[in-house]
Image (spheres, helix red, strand yellow):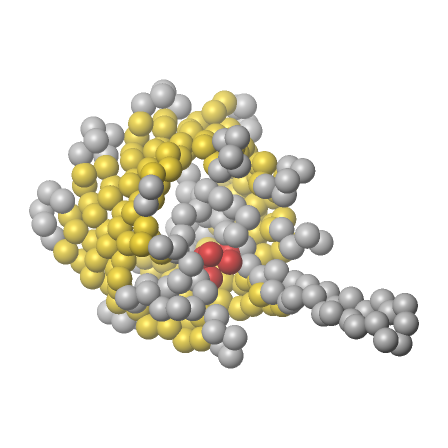
Amino acid sequence: MKKIISILTVTVLLTACSKSDDEVVTPKQVKTYLKSEAIDVFNGTTTFTLSSNYTYNSQNQIIGIEETSSDTYYSSNKSYTNFVYNSKGKLESYQLQYTVNGTIYNYKNTYIYSPEGVVQEITTTNLATNTITQRNTYEYTTNGLIFRYVQASGNVGQTNIYTYNGDNISQIEYKNQSGTTVQIQNFNGYDNKPNPFQLRWASVPDKLRSINNCSSEVRTNSSTGAVTTTQYNYEYNADGYPTKRIDISSGRTATWTYEKR
């Protein structure tokens, strides 16, 4: 199961409630949120487009994501519903419902936080059978994070080790079930503009992301030594937010639209 999920802009209203002519009115800050997204995805055989639309509550927290894939085989309508937040505004759970080739799937993801308020674990429950199908655990290090995908059996299926340089990911090391490194991915050439994925997942803490946009990704296969490099060009709007990302070699694109609230 792929969890595709998303978030964007934060709106602010202008308060103008004067008690006297001399009162100074201070406008509230208006923030930017992600409104829609379209990404060309390569599934190993063909390229298809995944389109997403986002909705928010009055606190500018994400409450819904609707996604549609254009791929003929995996043709699907996906909706993320029932986003539940706790009293501190942290995401408590969300229900994911999606359809693939006419079959409907329903899952619930529940967040477990440490006393310090950081995510320690996310459990995924199949609502059709009311069984836990997987757990994602998070171990925080001085300069990164260790993510573990734990199968229903309790075995660790995959481990990803994230290393950060400031607020941006510099490297991800992927390990298989045996603990053997299978791939290393390096991220280079960050700009100083906001990352749309950062906006998209601002209140969904299981999504690891950088705050800026990298211009190149280098993947190294640990067993063969094969190296694959992906380079990106970006287009920005007047506020400095990326509106389009172009994969230079393949031509695949990602586009974003925003709203201010």
